[in-house]
Image 1: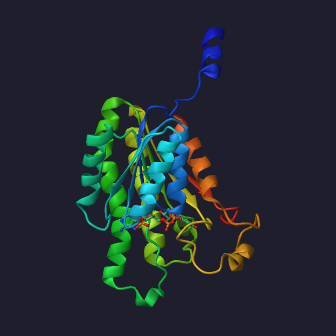
Image 2: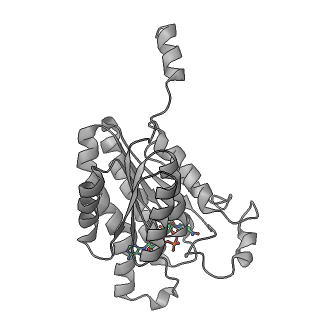
Image 3: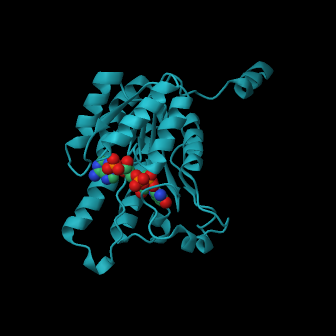
Length: 257
Ligand SMILES: NC(=O)c1ccc[n+]([C@@H]2O[C@H](COP(=O)([O-])OP(=O)(O)OC[C@H]3O[C@@H](n4cnc5c(N)ncnc54)[C@H](OP(=O)(O)O)[C@@H]3O)[C@@H](O)[C@H]2O)c1
């Protein structure tokens, strides 16, 4: 390698996200909202999908437009198998091809595990695992053709520890790690990275069950995480073309212990 080549390789900036089209599912949730804002700040155009919170989705789109960004909101119930393809079709028609998929929407209904019905189990897996797979399946061919893509699955530390929601939640999140490993190796030669981010106990979300203060003693750093901290790590993952096939925990030191 020449000196010039070395100099170039250390001074070439990382691939920016400016001008890219991103889809963030669950954009109306605590973490999703922070992800949308972080991506817009990086210059991406963002489509956020949501389940029920139409007013919140409108608010977020208005906030993005107020700072000169571009965003749209798409209502879509991810329990249905046809929804992921419909979301992508709608986003492509409005904004163009999806370069960045952040599969963040999640369901976490706490239930005693003996009471979980077949319907409860299937619903959890449909939203948390099948929908992320179908979204990736629909977006990957275009990413591969364009030689650029980013897929980030929002998992949970429950995939490692079992967690506190239920076995169906933990299993659905662990399934995302399998998807990550299956896809990452196959897509790496095409400029497409695939990673998972596994947070735990993030405040300001609809998902944190119970009184958060009772949970503090489980967290070595002694505080709950914040959506902005999840978004910050997500951006670092999405910017980095050399990071793929990884599951990164963001849990205040909870796992491993
Ligand atoms: N908060 C935590 O401590 C924590 C810890 C580990 C992992 N996570 C993961 O982080 C991700 C984001 O969760 P959050 O903490 O931000 O929770 P949240 O505030 O409850 O947000 C959940 C999001 O998912 C959407 N969603 C749920 N069911 C849906 C469905 N059937 N169809 C379409 N969208 C649906 C919700 O949309 P609507 O509200 O519009 O219906 C909402 O935007 C999830 O995957 C979760 O498992 C969170």
